Image (cartoon, rainbow, N blue to C red; front, top):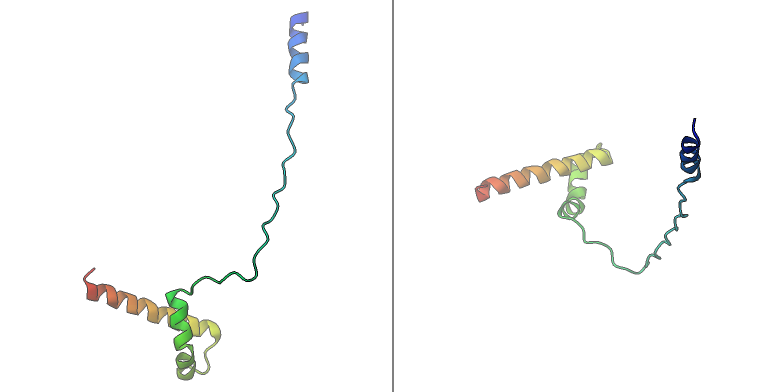
Length: 86
């Protein structure tokens, strides 16, 4: 190796990437008094009809009641689309 090659090697070794420490973001304080989001149409429907579905199917578990409500909402949505001509 010549002296030029040694100089190039030593320069490459000296060049190190210096990383700055990342700053941690401060969490925003949540307002406990802020209003909640509006309920979706499905939640409004399921809250209104959960008691009726429970009476019709007393042995049904919570997941079964939700799935029954989902089927009803989908069927109503399909019928509404057909009625509108979409």
